Image 1 (cartoon, rainbow, N blue to C red):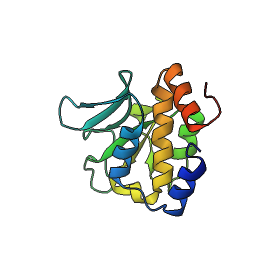
Image 2 (image 1 turned 180 degrees about the vertical axis):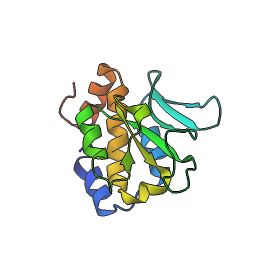
Image 3 (image 1 turned 60 degrees about the horizontal axis):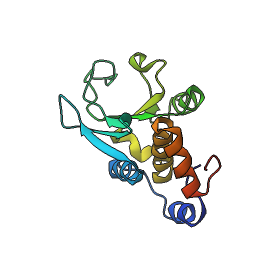
Image 4 (image 1 turned 45 degrees about the vertical axis):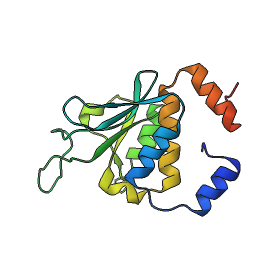
Length: 154
């Protein structure tokens, strides 16, 4: 989707299951990113222009293990550009991506860090890049797309 040219070829040829480090690396690779920490925990919150685009959530009652009832302590929230993208990611029951009633109508998907390996590094990088684009200002988004040689750039 967003990786193009030699970068995409290298990434695809070396693609592997995604890891938490890939989320951090992809978020930090985007321009104008700041990292905040959560109020109740030291969970990272990646922002562009003061808007969050990826964050590591603290355990909450809306995301629990269906067998044990324990709150998930490894949920990552990733913004998406539009509802159709969210639905495409969460509709498949086998997908590692999900949502909860708390996030109904919110342009984001959830994924457990413990299930990242069910997707690929390339998919996670593209999702994080898309999250950044969804939250970046139009000027920053156009500039980044232009630097990548992608449609929508300056």
